[in-house]
Length: 102
Image 1 (cartoon, helix red, strand yellow):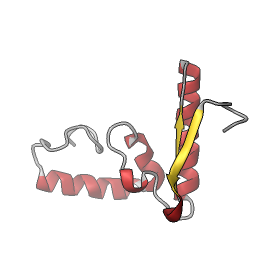
Image 2 (tube, rainbow, N blue to C red; image 1 turned 180 degrees about the horizontal axis):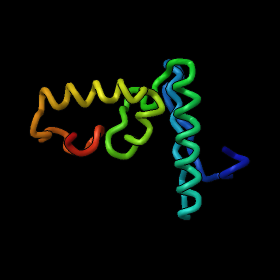
Image 3 (cartoon, one colour; image 1 turned 90 degrees about the vertical axis):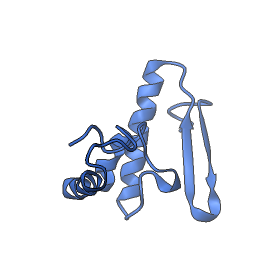
Image 4 (tube, rainbow, N blue to C red; image 1 turned 135 degrees about the vertical axis):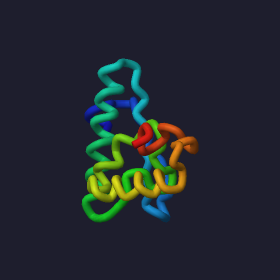
């Protein structure tokens, strides 16, 4: 991080649980875009050994694009099937994680 974005990031977390959080403090669109690329890289590294891409904070709207890194398409479809069954009108948590009604 220091090499790529000197003094433009904060690393914090729950050391006892190995939950490290990285926030990129971007001043430009280029830095913001680079930070998103880093989030994807970090998510892949976390998911490789069986970890999660969102830890205890979940994904919600801002990081929903990371879901396919952790789950295969058939797993995401299974989540959508549960959502369709329990909320057929797609009213709860609209567009939060699984996108528009499907």
